[in-house]
Every structure is written in structure tokens, then in C-alpha cells.
Image (cartoon, rainbow, N blue to C red; front, side, top):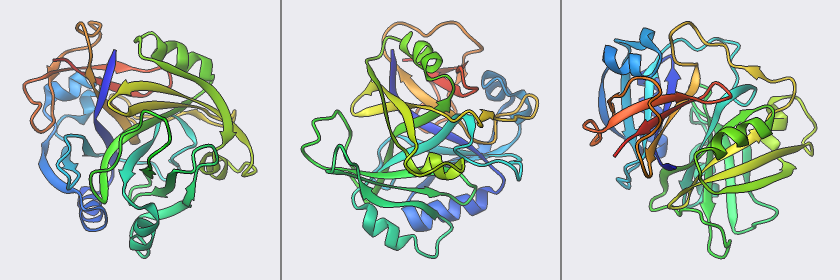
Length: 289
């Protein structure tokens, strides 16, 4: 089965801008930097990324869940939440309202003000676009939800949910369901940022489902509107924006798909990593024990 999230990899045009913003406004710490080795790029099924600069950051809490940024071109036409693939990174936060106040005047643009979820008012979240146009959700999980969700250990903590969008949702569910992880059945609710990004009325219903990974972490699968298409990607490169998610593996070795290489993550370099291509064009980096 898919295990916990270890990293989110995002392609950005300016590493210095991203590093400065995440350090100053979110308290993230730079843990590693360098150039992508050719073997790793080949393992990612993106050989043209060889030699690209990258940096890896982690939360101030020290939780071993990372944000890895790789330098690359991001077309001016790219907009998060409008193409298939990985689209949003959800991060635990102790107080989304206080964070919203802190981000005023920052490179992080709030597109969904802090609000409590209708079905679970003890969960409060906001949505922002980062300095490279990446979509981030910041979420507080209060007591009493009855849900298996992680809780923040710092003001801005680790990633605990990653969101993939595509169509049809049934195809995403079939593919992820084959791993054997528990699946929460789809529900339809308004998702304001998806409607906003795609020019739809704010009360439009969007189907979504959850894949449980363990330790309070999940993959969220969203049914995207018919206007959304597969994300354009240059030959042999990672897709622009949120490109890849790294997962621990639970159980027997993963399917022998692709080339196993050493993981390019702090503290995990001795762990073999194999990249799979998901049904919406998203990449999954599987870290074998």
C-alpha cells in the first residue's frame, strides 16, 4: 500500500524567490540543495531535468516531510487548479486566521479566506497561491472531528494531504484503489477554489474522495470540470507546478515500473525510489524500505 507522504516536488522558475518566501513567511528551513543527478532525473522519467538546481525545505517542527523545489520553466498560461494532475498541497497549521494576518503583504496570495468546514466545524482552512503560483491549503484540525487526520506540531507544520484532480473520478479511484489503501466513498460539496479557478458559480458541487495513507495523512482525489485538460509538459521534463509526490511504501516491494534510484531527500538517500505515472499525469515517487 501507499504509505505516508515524504515530499512534494514543485517545479518553479526562481528558487531564490521561493526559498526566501517559505523561510520568511512560513518558517520553513532549507535542508539540502544541489543539482539533480542524471540517474535521478532518469528515475523520475524526466531525463531533461538532469543538472537542474533544486532545494529541499522542511518545517521548523523538524517533521521529516519535505517540500522539494526544482528549477524549471513554468508557462505563463499555467494556473493551478485548472489542469489534471497534482494541484494542491495541504499543510497543517495551528491557526489559519493568524497565518492569514501574517501573510498580508507577502508573496502568498489568499484565494480562500479561513473558514470552518460545514460538515466538520472543528476543521478550519484557507487556501493560497504561493510565489510561483503553487496552490497551498493551510488547515487546523481541532479535536472532535472523529476523522483520522494529523494535527499540527508547529505554527506551520508538515504536509498531510496532497490533492490530485482529473476526470473521470472513477478512473482515479480505480487506479489508486488498486494499491489496497482504504478509500472513503466520493461526496459532492462546494469547493470554492476549484470553482473560482475555473469560472464557475461558488456553489458548484465537486465530487471528491479520500485515500487513507496512515498516520492521519491522505490523498484527495477531485473530479475536475470538463473544461480542465491534461497539463502541458515539455518533453522529458517534470510537469510545471506541483509535479510529483513522494510516498513511503507499506508491505512488499512496489511494482517494477521504471528505474529504481537513490532517493534525493534528506536522510533518505540510501532508500531506493521508483517513479510511477498516475492516470491524471501525476508522478508518484515510491520510496522502498
